[in-house]
Image (cartoon, rainbow, N blue to C red):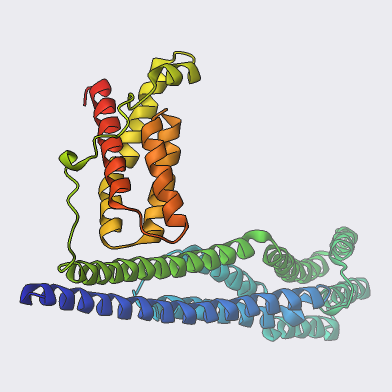
Length: 384
């Protein structure tokens, strides 16, 4: 092997090693990404389970759901930042924006202890004051009961509470101005708290919609497509490299092979001189459709024009299985174009190869004569 041939092999081997290392690094990164996606799925499922278990006590679980969604956002950030190619997961942006929106909604909708304490202190001050009528105090006490029942009860009573508060508002419409102003303040504060409760309810319903699941499934599909692509690249490059080595070794090993002369002059004189192709039979098979016949002959030339050289190489290399395979395929193609002499020559070689024996030189020469005659006749008819 010449020095430049060795250099080419070493360069190809180095390229294969570099590409293999890169693909392995990408695969390891995507395995880590797969683990992160699994963690994200667990947090999403935990949030949904909390929603189901706390559907009648939403204020009690809203903070827990918010924490789970915060963990999802953190994992999505890590998914991007720790990828081999930073920013390769830009498709996570929409998913992350949805999670952030739901988290922000819950953060706004949670009724804090300060708000509850403010309401309780206002009602307590109102009850202890002597400036308000007993009727106004009773209305505010009823409002307080409905509000706290709505926020912390184990039953879902939002519509009922709203109706009750509307009734209290109407009942207080004929109060004196100080009483009516105090009742309106409490009812307004109550409406604001119930709006938050309604927002939590809406956000919980959104968490159970298909939107988050669809985005997660898309990321999961995207990751699997990336892994398949990397594996395919590695397999293709490895296949090309090892085939290159195989053919290099094969070409080096055939330098000392003695090739047989297959010149047309060596064809025996007793070879059949019947027409290479029976066009009458071919036209009869295709109902005189010249276009179809021309197409069939074109396909034969395109697919089998190099078969003779392949058979010679297989014969010289004593590759019996290769001879059997090529002659079998060429026999079928010859029969389809009514090339009887070529079909018979292929059949003889195939039969000999099937028995495990090497075809004779005469059989190869007969095949060459039939093949050259058939090919020449087809090319002449096609005007090639």
